[in-house]
Length: 511
Image (cartoon, rainbow, N blue to C red):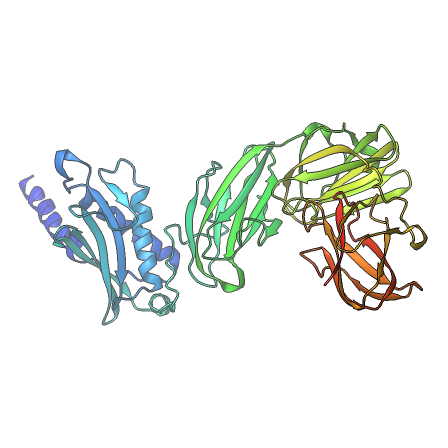
């Protein structure tokens, strides 16, 4: 019995220095083999960390994980080793220490190391140091055999020095599970070939949004089904140059999301997944005019459009010659089409706020149909809000009728007039008299601001066109500057807006 105890003790005495000061050479030929070796090393490291004392008052030891450098440079092996240790330690249950993805304040501990080429080996020296005085608490070597695989991991990645994140190496067969809670997961695209994969398992009957955040990289995203089929892709659907995909989750299904850099870009970014109930499902199916869902004027409709879907609504206009204003709200690029009994009446893409659609049209009494679709039919599912309201058609201004040169009213020099357009096809004509040769300016600007798109055309007394202008004024306002001889001149003012709502001021000024 004593002999056996001595033998066991001798074996432990032999193994401990190997653990603390050296390990047998590993011959990894792939990331999977290297990961296995790394996990074993990190588990041994955990045993050593459990013996460290904390700060004053018996506090838990604070452990930071620093860099592993070769000649003060970072190489792919630096990140693999560092993040492998960090990831393994982070997943160990019942740790007696607190782990940090960086150096920690003075008085605690830091794991870091150096990488050297030593003969036929690549040696990684791992050290635990006390941050307060840089004293080495423990140190040991891990030797990797030199081969084409390990030597490739020593190649300098270039000037970008984007670090591999702690979740590497992931793949479409080994994605990183993500909670659907809106919590950010910090990751990096460390080189042009890097692809990051995430696994989301949403509850059925919800609308899920997966997106990237940050400003250091232009990200692209692809969404795959449980069977590996591509469902949707996106480049800049999120904020800035970030990607975003929304989709309606099927019950019991999981999904994989792939993120990469646009045009081989690298950098750090955040990833998150969130969900919300699918709005207004009871209106489906409303995918055709015949299936249009009845709505009321002033009703706020919250709905969702899966990829390739179209929503139709029907609306009753109670009285004739009323202006219907219909628009979408939300963060997505929607399109609107308005139909009457005779066919298409109007359509729009981005006249609303942001990428929302907006239509304003004077309509007769009767039924109209509203079609809501996505600008990009291959886009992922999006949520939107549909709003409708009635606005009485503007009463004709005091200068009406003025729809032709024969009906043109006089305008005095240097005295403005206020006009309006009955619709996008309306024309307003005025005339003025020049008694002295000189320079004159003609301006037509929206009464509430320069957003009304006006067009001016100037004619002589024989109604021969002299000059015209569209956007010579502020933004969409029009402005002409011309030299005129004495005589009578005519001005025709029109608009390029399909549904003009604002009044405009017209002014002829002698310079």
